[in-house]
Length: 98
Image (cartoon, rainbow, N blue to C red; front, side, top):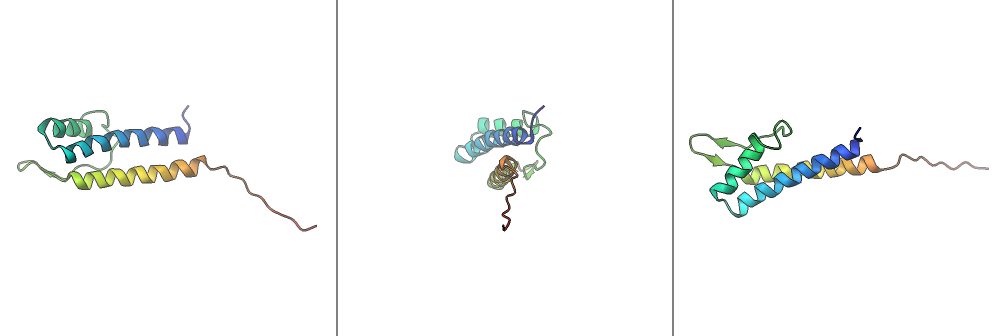
């Protein structure tokens, strides 16, 4: 059985891999890179895992990659915060006067 921290680390890894694909599209927007990212988002490894989708128009085929990239970064930041919170020990110390 996976712990919460292990699940968060796995989610972070998935988002990081997708972030690399989207970053590749921004840096080098070839049809091959775009197709690889769209396939990964819609039909590939991340099927059912991502709640947000790209904003695009079907006929004009315009994509908002920078917005999607920003949303992935936000998701990774939130996951990092959850990983840190999950890893922290719950220790309460108190001092009593004698």
